[in-house]
Length: 187
Length: 246
Image (cartoon, rainbow over all chains, first blue to last red; front, top):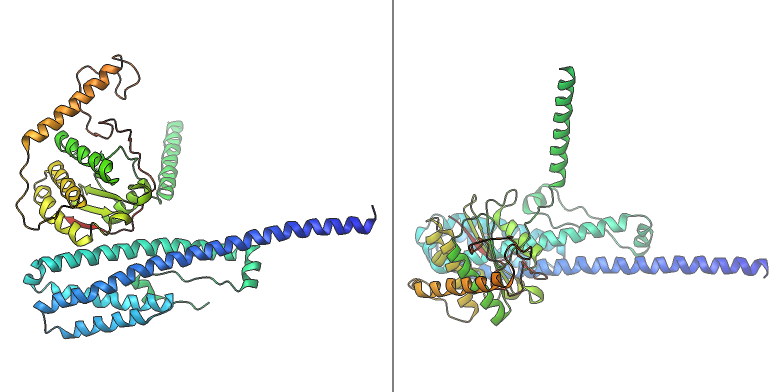
């Protein structure tokens, strides 16, 4: 066998191995990204669920505390901002706004014993609390996936591939307090 | 003396290292293994209630493929009860592939009752209904420290709703059917008797070894011989449900 053929053969083998590993890494990246997107979709579901509960809750409270209009408009605005947000970052921010508006509404309801005894209000509060817990659960799962994603695209040699494909680190879904303290870093 | 001091010092140092390393490892919460449908880890349930829950759960599983797990625990620390029940639910995988599981958790120290449905039961048991049933069927017992009765009553109520019965708010409490309970206990004892007779006394086949009189175990997970021994798996929940403090 000629020397040049040998070299060619070795080069082909190396290329095949390298190519295989690149394909494997590429597929892994896609899989991870899909899992992050899937996680966010779950979070979105729950955010939507909460937004759907809000009008009912507001109406019930209005029945007992019609003059607390400030909170009602605040909630309506926060809700429409959430419905209008179309990127995860914008949704996270709008959600923080709805969080604080809702906690004000619930604080106000403390002052109306009749409202607190209303069975439909109690039910709505249960639904709301359950949905908050669902959001917390899905947020935790989403953040775990983001962490795996962010770590994997920084590791060598996947980082080279990720850089070539323009894959970037994704932001975590922080809890409200942290969102206010540390604004989202733009990557 | 010097030697003794050094040894003591070493022991203390070792203990310190152990404590710290334990602290470092304790980060992921360790959940107990499931015993079955009834998991009375806090040992606060009476046998009769445990047996009733067992029966309700077996019926639910057989007729509707729904898995019910009732859990009592001393404390959920360092987690709060809600985080704990979600973690426990998903660790055990209550509800199988259909995610049709329901977990009822009572934490004694926290004075907390939490009920969480799997993804598959969220439609049948909305959070509002779960909460209302706790208020009506559970809290009166729990505030009285009648944990077993409360949990049995809750289990019955959820089973009824899952079976399609309309749950009526503020309806009068179902009368405790004494004869039914007696019959249930009779059946269980009969089953146990048959079981123990099958094996020679003192054999190592049973869990308890050579027992003389029949004792109904506190945790009734293995009673009934349905082939389950905490055999959950695959069921998931998203953290919904409702809870109360008492």
